[in-house]
Figure 1 (cartoon, one colour):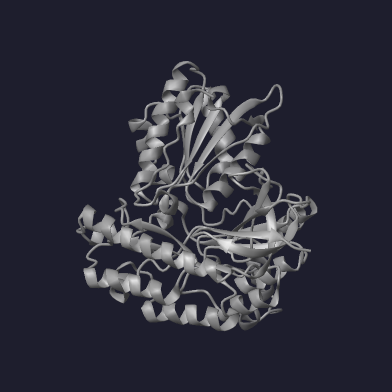
Figure 2 (cartoon, rainbow, N blue to C red; figure 1 turned 135 degrees about the horizontal axis):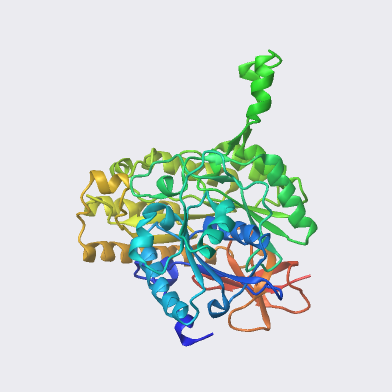
Length: 491
């Protein structure tokens, strides 16, 4: 791969790169002889990475195999994120790089997928002259036709948002898969209208997948040797499914009363997936403080294979700021949910969060409320950002982005510094414990050490001994850093 392609700049709006940088994933080499080659570069959240697996599956059925080398590609897709301005700037930088590659390979097709495509739509075709395809998150079934349009000399555009598309019938191609962990999308879209967020406008209304298709996918993954699945949704706690057509028919025939219509909740879905096998570990993301129920917590407690870890974004520790963020809960509600988690699990549950520094009109005292909430909770880790105004959001329409950049960065640095302290404190609590760890790779520093994650989603590093990738190991923790637990395998 040339120097042109090697340098992918992923530094976000940040003070600490490890805390707030944007993740990227690139397709692996699966193309067979005679296939056109597809290169996908995916940015942002796990939902985007999961969507790229859907895209790869759709294109595979149309004689495309994947490649990790953009210079070999016939078709290049950037699956984009719009959550922060820096993410979009990174994509534009990458498009300029790809344009230089395309000059030496004129037949290459370049497409922009995902949230940025949905937000900017045809504007991308006008501004970035090398873009041939623009496709939103609900139009991936249409990609073969869009590629065909480009082959015929036209541009390909589909940014239609669906009220029912879940891709439930498409078996994802597991990109960058270690054969151990996989993602399962259980729902799409978002009905929360957080004032800082573009997701409701780029991913559409909330809709849930048939639970039976989810369980079937989990069973198939386990049968293939996978040991862990992560259930994904913008807000998994609002998962809700009922067989509408069947219910409607039964209601019309008076075989069913309105009050007896069965609705599968997220807690019930967790129970169903956990029942696939006690050896299949279950994670989920993301939870919303306004929706996470006691039933979910008790279901987690009941099943050992459901990990004791909850990502519960708070965004701010001040009730007024939460109100203008339209988070629909206040500081006291959030603390109530934390208290309930601690009541059910004690210290045996990892909790992580998202936090935004310098949201519109935030005062110094309100920033201090975020720090004091952090002191109360002591998150295991957090994703931390300073506020980045996004066009089209409620905040952009209603509020002035009035916090100076240097103040945002200073407040973010205070949040990052405190979180580092708390991460170290939380990790120190695990020293001396014996933990069950799923081995998912080698340590970044040595092939003589494995790494894996415990139930709390913490990375554990230990000498590999006679253990094997994909196995569970019983590890005694003897030391820690701010971000990692260190241990030894015991019998």
